[in-house]
Length: 128
Image (cartoon, rainbow, N blue to C red; front, side, top):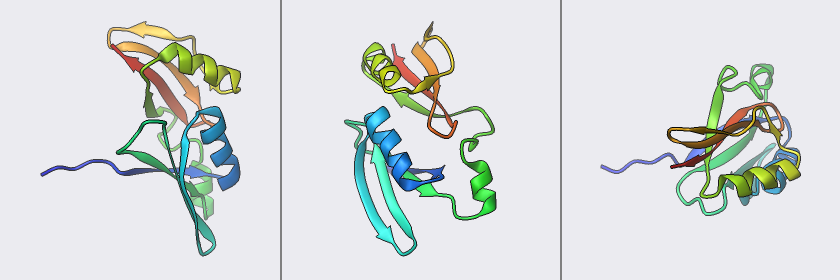
């Protein structure tokens, strides 16, 4: 048996501002943006990624709206692996991405926590 994660859903407040953040600030590719009645099917993925992508899901009720930016209870929710930490860290900083800490070297690699436009925490990570 072979399984994989295809999509990870991330709650957003607005499709267009989320698309702009993910494509312009993080450098992701917009894979799909299709109308689905009152909603849209919006998928982005990191450059070079083939298996896993993110579904940008606009919150549609109060309970979902309350979870925007806190989908993992304040912990790091997503891990963006890179082949060049310093290239991506520099580019993201130049685009105004908010890093919550100074990059650090760990036994497993170089890492720094950053936030998306709503406060969801991510690790930018280059594994050794």
